[in-house]
Length: 367
Image (cartoon, rainbow, N blue to C red):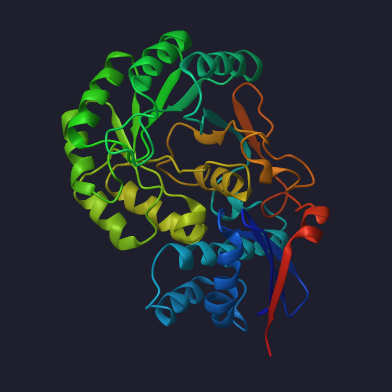
């Protein structure tokens, strides 16, 4: 069975991929979000041309081939495009075998604990506290993450004093029986990150994400060495060499690969295993409600070093209007702080035909 046709359906924010084999069987995947229309073009120029005509089931060698043939173009866009191929082929195999992807990976469908992940920095401490308490009471979340500092902020805050205000306010309101996580998004120097980290420790916060510029592994290690809480990172890193360096030097306590940024499930499994060999938990990054979070659910339920929970964005259409109408049915319903991995074949979802009709379309075929 070979790959006969690869189609993309994209807009600026998100893009889906359909793979069709020479037998007419299909699978669906996604290129990474953000500038997805650009990624779709790269998919056809630098991924599809190497994948067409290759084995649709044993496709790991094809991913290696793409890496070799496009060796002059390492980095984010190539990996984001490769994700579309990888995730579509995992879905194809699941559909052919009548199994969810998690089962193909050796795991089981079922419930998965989630943490409510806030993406907002333009929110006051009071408003963030109110919406967290509402989600706790209505959805049963037992873990929450909020933002401190400014994104790549060079020690600036979103506005003066916000970090010192929001950390104790949210932490005290949530209480002792809730896991509390904070994300700095590369916002601090080591000295400031350590200062903030000690405040986090005093408030019972156990997870400090991307405290320093993510590309400065030595700075992150300095913070990790100075603090008792878990320092996490890796969401942006898409090359195995970076992961090898980060893990090898002990820069983080928790690794956070993003399935879509990294190049798909196959490459994410490899990074998870790298972390497991070093004794590190893996809590992947999945910060929106496109296919990335669904893929991450299947990944977490299959790896031996899965962290305590899934990242689940709490931002709706007011923040991410492009999330509207992606799927026929919502795969992210929360009950008692948990989401459920479907036992349906593949990813267990159908892309909304009405959304596909509005998207930019392109096809590459085997000849």
